[in-house]
Length: 296
Image (tube, rainbow, N blue to C red; front, side, top):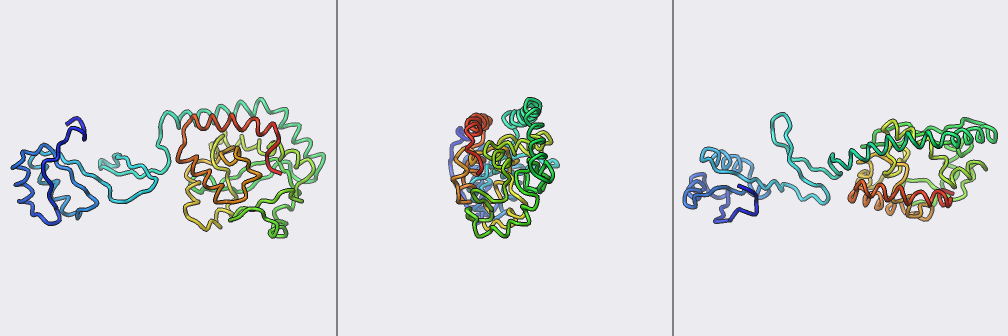
């Protein structure tokens, strides 16, 4: 049998109502080459009996395994411990494109760290000379599938910025669990420049090199903000590695105030992902960074 399109439906039978002998009689009457079973409408025990009968008769069985009405998942078949398994996957499966993405991440991050090393050194010195506190800001963020990892940034705020966040809660401009305000008073003078041109994000190239992040992907959120998600569907943005840049980044991130719109852009990226989309986003990120239209 060369495929579904070559099958001709000669008769139908309800396995929930018919006996095994009636089913076999129908096979013999039509000298059937194959049987198609719609699993979603059939009791599992009856499916098993029909398959066993076809196995004894040497008749091929096609099981339409549409058990569930999935909205976004793609269904594939795989083998686990010598048993067939249905895989419901809402993110792209391993392919040459995903391998190319991983290669681009590693090589791209390594090359950028080398090329930008003078800028990284100059930035570190500038932070040390202009404000007390550590050069690097470390924070627990949610990575792939919600696994926490330590994300690195050049420190652009005063040292007690996290402790003072609750004082500014009333000025939050974002809806949902995320905290963002324009002209944040916690930002240092040098930090404002770093954030404007996204220089503060460059240490995350180390996260990319370590495999915790990707060059392109949904921006990683702090663990406490993810814990406040009020819509479970928002967690699907965690189904891929977080990235340095994303659709939100190139869509005027300073203007997007609705967290649902932010998530919508992330899910749009996940559902339409390709290696070429990553390249497109990376290319569009360059002029945005150079123009200084980043965070305020």
